[in-house]
Image (cartoon, rainbow, N blue to C red; front, side):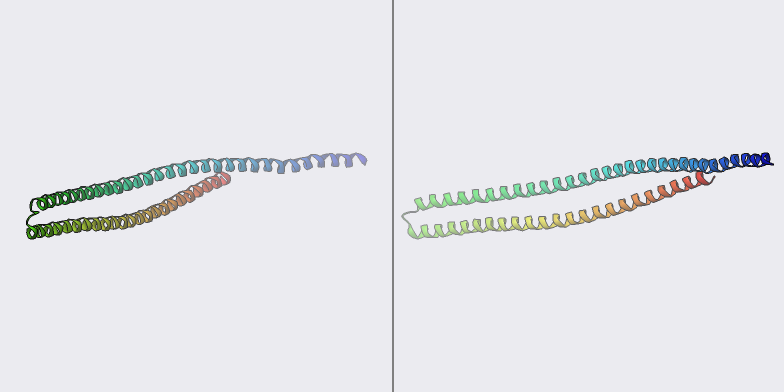
Length: 196
C-alpha cells in the first residue's frame, strides 16, 4: 500500500518542475523581445539624431550665408553713399575756396574803387552763401538718405527674421512629422515581429 503513494509523489514532482520551467522560458523570450525592441529604438534614435544634426547644420549654413550677403550689401551701399557725399562736399568746398580766392584777388585789384569793391564782395558773399547752402543741403540729403537706408535695412532685417522664423517652424514641423512617421513605422515593425 505504501509503494503506490511514493510513485504518485514521484510522478507529481516532474510535472511541477515543468510548470516552473515554462514561465522561465516565456520570461526569457519576452526579455529577448524587449532587448530587440530596445535595440531597434536605439538605432532609430541615433538615425534621428544624425538627421537632425544634418538638417540643423545645413539650415545654419544657409542662414549665415543670407546674413553675410545682407551685411555685404548694406556695407557696400553705405560705402558708396559716403564716397559720393565726400566727392560732392570736396567739389563744393573746392569751388567755394576758388570763389573766395577770386573774391580776395578782386578785392585787392579794386581797392581804389570802393563801390565796385562792395558789389564784388556782395556777389562773392552770395556765391559763398549759395555754396554753404549747397553743402548744407547735401549734408541734410545725406543724413536723410542714411536714415531712409537704415529704415529700409531694418525693415528688410525684420522681414528676413520673420522668414527665418517661418523656415524654422516649417523645419520643426517636418522634423516632428518625420519623427512621428519613423516612430510609428518602428512600433509597427516591432509589433509585427512580436505578433508574427
